[in-house]
Image 1 (cartoon, rainbow, N blue to C red):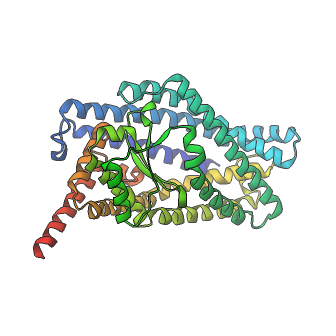
Image 2: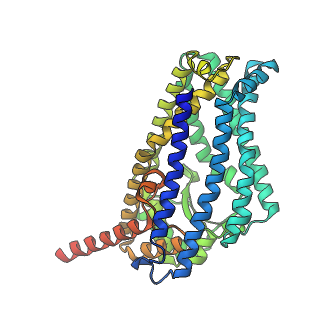
Image 3: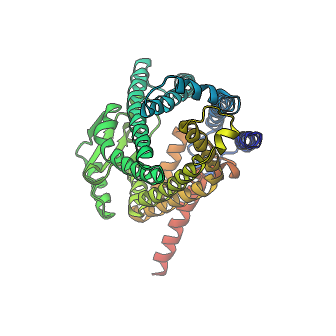
Length: 420
């Protein structure tokens, strides 16, 4: 147990070291505006973006420290044994006892996160001019999220425990199939059922932009049945655009903040990037990778729960199967951090490929460069992330790297045309 505790603490300290390196690296470039941003960012805005990163990092670190202390006390301080004993004393049927065991822990984690979410939304984000939400809207969102997540977690827990009881030797495989099928169902119904509970989606007005979007999708061989505008400005001034749904539910969604802040060419470039993900089958590739990792993880959880090894190490006297699963998931989750460099390298390569296809579809990288500059400026993005921090945390290449790659695509394309 002490060895596992030491490993966990070292991993958490390494996370904080990455945060510190990232901030120090950014501050070393204080006042240095990249040539790509000279026309859009001045010294005061650069300082503002750096202050924003520092405040975000401090808040995230405070939440992480609290959660880490809770985890250490719970797993290594004897609370797991007390909790397991209390659940056993309730004398519920096995399925009900398992549901109570996991659902209470899930909501306990959500409750601990609420104060930090409040500080983020109503203090930090408002300080930097992003928050537009109201207390009433925040409470409504919290209520909806709690109900929806509670229903989903309950369905998965009941289904998983039932599979364990019916197939003790292969439940890990059946549960993986269940998770895979469930994720597909949620992805399909989310645009119709879940997303409208939080935002209003209206068809984009019939104009040249909508026609250009549809033509762009057709050029890539994708049928975008709906082009919708989302009222993101009700909650935040951050902007984005995305494709969502499967099959007939496929749609293009534009934040109203994006429509207000960018011209048509820039919007098309951003959408061309998203189309690139579909064209290069990145959704399928990501699904295969993450589901493969899930399958391996579930198998290791299964193997760990087959013995009394875990509950003996963590001194759980009431040897419940639920405690074994919880400890096994905790140990397997620790290994995920070690895989992050591989996962983020994979996603960054896909983002670069999507940027290349954006250039190929539009024939011009300058609009995507202009869009990235605006997005970075409007979202106060960090222009100087530490390389090691990027390796562990960035799913996209740093913005300067993306801009320089796009310009290389343009130069290479111009060279080829000149040779022709």
